[in-house]
Amino acid sequence: MKIIGVIPARYKSSRFPGKPLADICGKPMIWWVYNQCLKVKELDEVYVATDDVKIEEACKQNGINVVMTSDQHKTGTDRIGEVARKIEADLYVNIQGDEPLLEPETIRAAILPFLENDTLQITNLMTKIKDPVEVVNFTVPKVITNKEGIGIYLTRSTAPYPKGSIDYAYYKQVCVYGFKPEALQFYCEYGQTYGKAKIESIEDIEILRFIENGYKVQYIEVDSDTVAVDTPNDLEKVRKIVEDRKKAGTI
Image 1 (cartoon, helix red, strand yellow):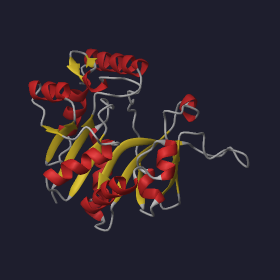
Image 2 (cartoon, helix red, strand yellow):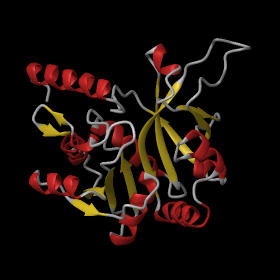
Image 3 (spheres, helix red, strand yellow):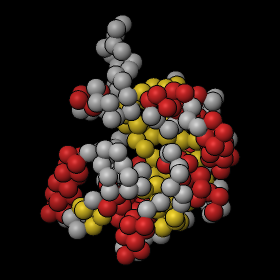
Image 4 (cartoon, helix red, strand yellow):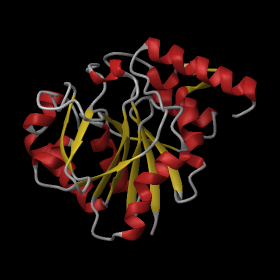
């Protein structure tokens, strides 16, 4: 099985323009993500997929494989779909370019189920929320699954609402996805024909396009301490963590 890791990266983020090139201890954020991916032995190749010449140039300067894609894509998954049309593989792993602390073992968790079950089409990860603030933070998608771990819904709201019981652990999405080529093809063709799906558009969560259309998204729970960089404040948190780890000699 040929497995490719793809890191979608765009410059024009609404909340944080230029985010992939943000400096973290002397290297752009995209470099940190890419090098974490290189530690995953199951990945045969890793690419950054971008539509911006600044990101392309930064990748080339740092020895990062990069693929230029259209600037018309509405989602990162659409960008992965274009890469899939250019580079053939049996499995594509979407690793978000704004999680520079993402652990290699966490990335592997999205891959391993495909090696054991050839009927799987899509995987996504989730981790238990440890900080209560994240439960009410709209930038953190919360995951609800059935008893088999199949995704029922993702929302930026606090859900499920604890009316009948408070005996519940909340889970947040970890943005690593595994896609079979056929699933990616569906996603892209749907977008070209209809645009975003209804709830996908309302919540602004890409994976909902699959769930709305009846696809089974297998969720895998991981114990991850990754920090997604959505704002400059998040970036400062990550810088501090990286600095501390460098001082401790753990990276």
